[in-house]
Image (cartoon, rainbow, N blue to C red):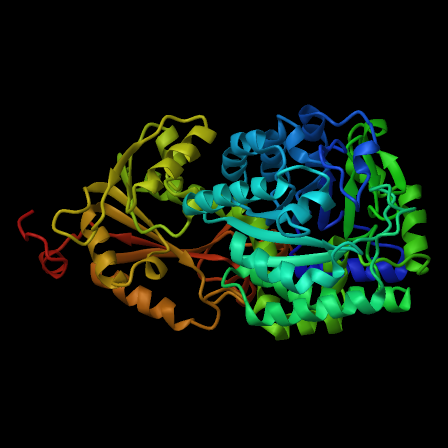
Length: 592
């Protein structure tokens, strides 16, 4: 199956919405794992609902049918931490769906379970951005009253401390604070926002309006604030965001979307209509705890149950009931300010998307966010490339250089060679990186190779010798990268493989820096003979458009499309000089 880039998929959703054809699986998915909850919130009665929750094994059958399409997955409840197997659900989401972002709202009530599972969840979510949103509706005991849970606010403080500790080890964690704006707190939002930022030190602060939802059993509750009061509250939040822009790219993206969402949600309350087209049922969906599939949680209308369709999400999603729901939404028979669905709607509304991009560099983040979906394919292409070069050069020993930008895959580039009996040494710069290497090999059911801690790779004798040295992303990781390349080349008895982000790739972090390629090539030619270079992780849709066979590694020379789309550029440098002149150039003994 060809996995289309996010931009192409967004265009597909717009075409499907307009025509009723070209249906796709959702890019934004909420998975509610249970209705059970120990809280008794004034804005939610979901705890009253009793159903037979899907098991981990059932999720293991459902998630593969989503074809790795969802980019953003929210795992909601109830209270998800009622489930002792919640960490396993997260693991399946990461390995079977591979979203760019996993979002988990947390009430912080069941602290013992949270402290037990959250470190496992952080580890299981490696490869995705893990957004942990603490639910804070007031400050101190006032929060406990709204949430109907004693000592809840103090428990949230403890959970926030745990998350801050985990962030020291896991760079993919984003800590957020989330407030439901209701009649109970609308006049206090400015104070709540300021105090919550000061107490919890989040990467971002967000809020959404309390509304009548079938899922939450709040259709008869008078909880939604007056439109004018809500407008005043979100105006303050918009100003607060502009004054507290996060440095974290995912948090910045959320903030940029929230700037637009606050205005959109206020207009929906004021005008009681779909201000922009809603794509619930096309681009966003929800899987209920008992297997029912909804287009959204506000209406919570089942379009079918996966248990009745062989656990095939697509079979339910593309069925006649789904078509009827989509027709109703297209006809503007409903309107709501649901935040999760609104994110997708904003991305699919051209004027809104332009404003999101204009607010900062988040437009590029939006477009690039789907590139994380291809991370496993990129990793596989690097491993295959390294394995092939190692075989060609008859390498019996491999050193993976310590300057490795692929943090979650550190020590994994030579894994295929290691599995075939080649001696692999992984050099790391920091003690904490050893755990990442061990975890990666454990997931691959392999013994851990030798790990060498080398704090100063440029020091005398810092790097051990090996037949082949593999270095990933050195120019971005090492200030003196030219000297580093020379050092790793001296450590390579036969060949050096240098893999780096493709600076010619459109919309990449290095886009427009094409001069880097010639700079890197010049340095590589100074340490050996560049035998070949190739583009790795080439998207299958690019090759399909060119009528070329699907392959993640494409040897140079290549066409413009490959150069602009491939995420990685790899060089193979022969470091075994065959002439005295070459040996002198490399600083080696001529008689060796």
